[in-house]
Image 1 (cartoon, rainbow, N blue to C red):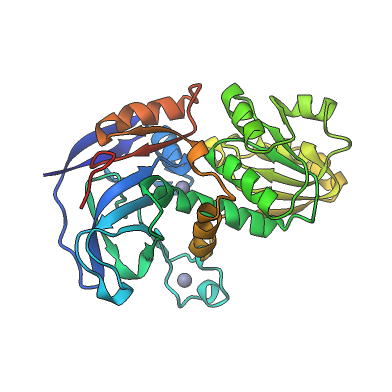
Image 2 (cartoon, rainbow, N blue to C red; image 1 turned 90 degrees about the vertical axis):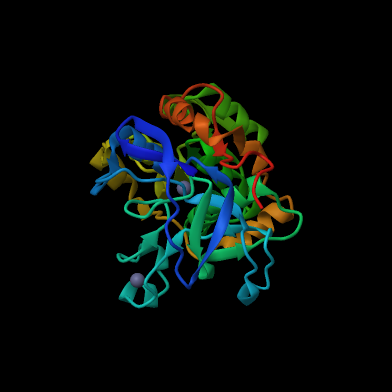
Length: 345
Ligand SMILES: [Zn+2]
Ligand SMILES: [Zn+2]
């Protein structure tokens, strides 16, 4: 029988047998090749939910994934055994938000890997054919799994609209932060100043093109701030992320909030934000960004491999969740290979 990683509640992750459900006519079956552990999965693990979205019954996370087709899919011109990615987002296509193009904000969205919809931390998964993303030949399982987080980074940079050579402060150099960093550079941003408490993440940021990397907002303000940056992108999991973003911004600056704070609350000094007259945008998931994510990876303009530090079997998933939740040194993105690193069709 297939195995899956189940989240039962806060700090309770277990690998258990999963009986594969029946497929539906619009679906196709995949052998999961690689699936990433996302910061949002860690919120379910740490807090038992995100805001009002709670774990009501044990569920299988996993929305960043690629897999091998178990059958030909002629509609997509794909053969059995082809490696594909999957867009986890299925919006209704009919509500007023979908109709104006904000499919990422659809209240009726069905999102693979968000409760109650089981995700890809398992051996096999049925997915709607309409959400299958064909990939170029040269792409591997790691890249396939990294396209979803890269899509989130692209969406954040789209909202940020960096001006040519504009100075940017980037809070948080986790996997999403590091993908945003690289995408900002592609989009023409200038010096990117990273603020990140973990040593190895600051080192990764410098490696991937950050101009400077400060451990705290105070260090940044004392050092490279020069009155703050006109553009600030926040990609932390900290309740202080919003506050730090405000303090990193200069008067009239723009803030892009991409992170999800632990405990679902921010602490914010109102006067600091108001006096600066800041403009603010929140990031939720992404739009139709797979083609560009594939383009950035295939052309080598964004290095997704550098963001992946751990590749393990499903059995190791509970340990990885704990290590990531603790913010242990040395961890960036962790991928699971439920069928082994070369497993699958
Ligand atoms: Zn994610
Ligand atoms: Zn909708």
